[in-house]
Length: 89
Image (cartoon, rainbow, N blue to C red; front, side):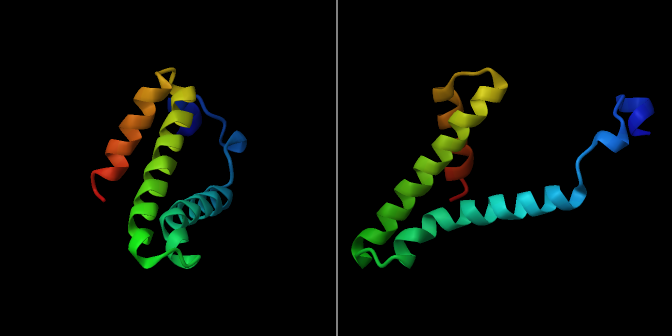
């Protein structure tokens, strides 16, 4: 079906295990970023703002990087990712 409808060769596709492991590691690293101020003992009063700022910076970095693949402006991609990720938070 992949070959006939999508024009893909199933033998050229990546490993599902490799995709699963990479996805797990990516999500784990992304989830660790806002926890770092709490893990490394920042002052209790400043841990939450530091965590929020580090998460916002990481979201904007990911959005700006993804814009390289979409052909859009890096600034647009950064703020779009900030809204998408920061909205639920």
